[in-house]
Length: 84
Image 1 (spheres, rainbow, N blue to C red):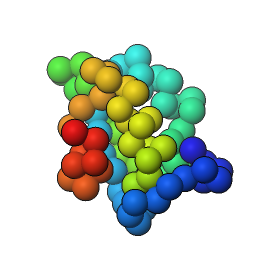
Image 2: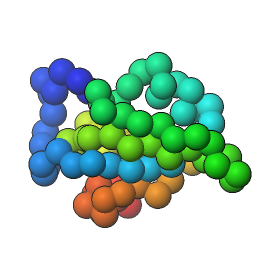
Image 3: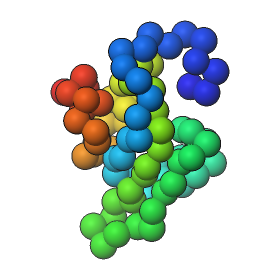
Image 4: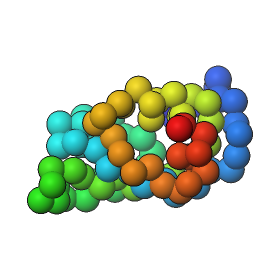
């Protein structure tokens, strides 16, 4: 996603927040979504908060959808609206 060569932008880059399962948080720690990605500590419910800057692109939307039940509470709403 970093190269952006095949992106189909549908909006400006924005700070995006979502929650992922612990196993996915470990993967994202090694394969960052963006340079400014922050992964918070695991909360009691087993979900980790991720914050990063993402372009609102078809590629990014498909990537978020591909995470399935391992991702929830996507913010801001414009990202979520394009997904569900």
